[in-house]
Structures are given as C-alpha cells and as structure tokens.
Length: 488
Image (tube, rainbow, N blue to C red; front, side):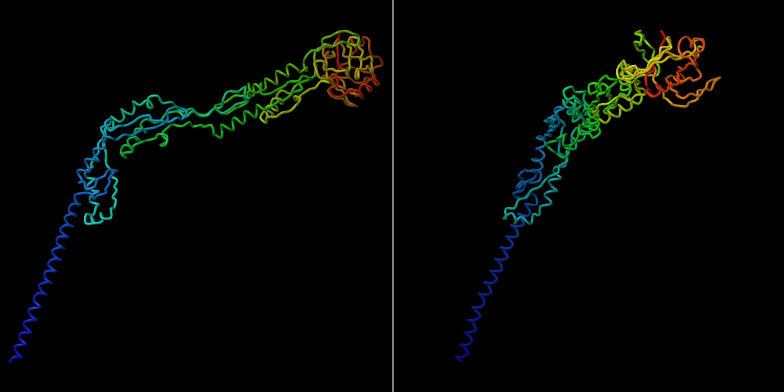
C-alpha cells in the first residue's frame, strides 16, 4: 500500500514538470511570429514608401532626387528649363577664326518641357521598392531623363536671323592662278577664301534639332554647315596648270636670225599666255606674229639691194629668188613646241631660202655679175675675180625674151640638158638656171659674143656663153649661188 502511494506521487511530479515546458515553447513561437510580423510590416511600410519616392543616392539629370516624390522631381527638373541656353559658334571671318555667333535662351523661343511628370513616373516604375534593403550598401542610382520640349519656331527663326552672322555672309571664293609676278618670275596659286556663308534654312533646322536634344552648344564648323569653295589650292588640275605655265616661262631661246641675235624669254612669253578660267594656253596668233615680225625685219628674200658694179656704178637692184626667207608656218609650229617643252637652246629659224652670207648684204664675196648693158660677165669667188667673159642675153625687141635684172640664186645645175620652147629644142652641155627658165648655158651655135648682138639677135632670155666659159663657171657655182643681173 505504501508502495502504491509512492508511485502515484512520482507520476504527479512528472506531469507537473512537463506543463511549464510546453508553455515556454508556445511563448517563444509567439514572440518569433510577432517579431516577424513587425519586421514584415516595417519592411513593407518602407517598400510602400519607396513605391512613391526615389531611393536615397538617386540623381536624375544631375539633380539629387533622394527620397523625392515624382511631382517634386518633375517640378525641379521642369523648372530648370528656364536656365536653358544653346550657344552657337562658327566662323567670324574668312580667315577661319571662330567664336560665338549667337545664343538661344528659353525665353527667346518660349521653350517648355512636355510630359515631364510622365517621364519621371516612368523612371520610378523602374525602381524595385522591395529591394530598398540594398540601400544599406550605399548604392548609387543615376538616371538620364529624356524630356520632350516645345517652343515657338517662328520666334526661333526671327531670333536667329537677327544675328550678324546671318546678315553679313561672305561667299567663299575658289582658288585661282595669280597674275604674273615680277618678283617670282611666274605664276602662283591664290588660295581659296573660306567665306562665312551657309544655307540659312538648313542651319535653323539644325538648331531646332539641337534644342530638341537639349544640347548646350552647336558648332557650325563641326557640323559642316559652311559653303566651301569648289576649287581649293590643292586642286590637282589647278596645280598642273601653274606647273605648265611656269614651264613655258622657263623657255629661253637665242635665235640667230640672219646674223641678228634675238632673245626670246619669259618677258616676251608672258605676254603670250592666256587663261580660259584656270586653264592656260598660248596665244598662237601672237607667236605667229613674233615669227612674222622677225622674218619681216631680217629676211632679205624679196627685198631690193644696193650693189656696186665692177665698173663702180652704184645700183639698187630688185630681188629675185634669192636671199634669206623664213619658213613662217614651220617656224611658228616649231617654236610653239619648244615653248611647250620649256626649252633652253640656241637656234636658227627654219628657212625656205638662204643667202650665201648672213646680214642685209647677203650676196657675199662669191657671185656671178652679169652686166646686161655691156654684155659682160664677171665671176667672183671668195672676193677674187676668177673669170670674165662676153655673153649674149635675151633680145630686147621681144618682151618675153628680155633677160630680167635683179639678184637671183642658182636654182640648180646640170649637164647635157635639152632646152625647149615654143619653136625650138636646143641641147646644151652646161645648164645653170637662176630664174624660172632663165639661166646660163653654153651656146656653141654662136661664133660671137658681147657688143650689141642682144638688141636684135639675142637669146630667148638666157645668158649665152662660150663653151669653155660655161664649163669653167659650172665648176664654181652651186645651188643658191648668187647671180646678179643689171642694166643701167
């Protein structure tokens, strides 16, 4: 009995000790739940706050918007439009100096932001309020707000067009070839002028674009707004033209023009240079005139000459086919090519005919002198009288047979020729023509020479010579040898 009571007592003691343990656990769970609820409520309340406010350390367009609501941010950002200014820079002069040419202020064009609040709210929606705990890491939040703007375009155009740069525009000028420079002895390239001209409407459209982007500066030079010269100093064609014309000017030709020294250099050639725009050309007519002038001055062909006969009579004789005669066309063409090549040389002009000696007295000291009045011939060779003889010239009672007077050059010479006319055919051993069909030859059918024979029984116009004299003369003369015939 006593044992049973002891057992019951032990059981009651155990039960009494279990009940406080259960209670303790319940209290702990309750406290944890309560704390969790408090934390969740606290966290949620902060998250709820940041659904309407920007996180700390948030900047929008450079403005600190920490813990600001959207309307507050919109008001601050929107208020900054009043401070907006677009600075426009560009060329101040044709030398290329740059600087400010005008400014656009918000009030000048009634500039306003549009949809600012909407855009700010859109930024806030990008913020995850539930992640506000990351603020403990001091994280930075930076946003760029793209704001629409509106402004009065007519006010903008009116403001811009009043700027000096829009009023006094200078058109660019192309590079070109300078006038002839005495100092440099040639031509140079005058560089292009930059100018300050641009398309007004295009620039206004560009300014609008920069205002819409809310840019603070616009450089018209960087935006390639200026009209540029179409030909610059570096233009290949322009440089080739200058090089070409200066090459022509380097020409230096020293002529021996029938014994006269004629210098052709840049001082003359510069007058022959013409320009079609920036393309040089030689005045070919002026070159031809240069050749013609010198030929006229120094050619002797076709000019009368003074001559003193063996008997001492001073005569002025007409010119026949003898003397210095420039090939004007040929020389003009050759001279043009020499100038094109920038040649430096000494030369004679091209001749169609040459005298035996240079100068106005081009007969020289070797010639045939036929005194038609006295019917006597003299042959001089290198200043020495080497032969003389009587002859018979053209009969004077036949106008077509009269031997012409003048200074002639031997056309050619040949042996065993047959002379033919309307009513004759005569073989000769030595034939030396000097003026068309007039010439010197042997006349073996004659037994007498000289005197007055020529007056009524002369030749058909030729100078008839004894055979031995014709042979001797033939040995001295050659093509171009002077033959002087005269009456007095």
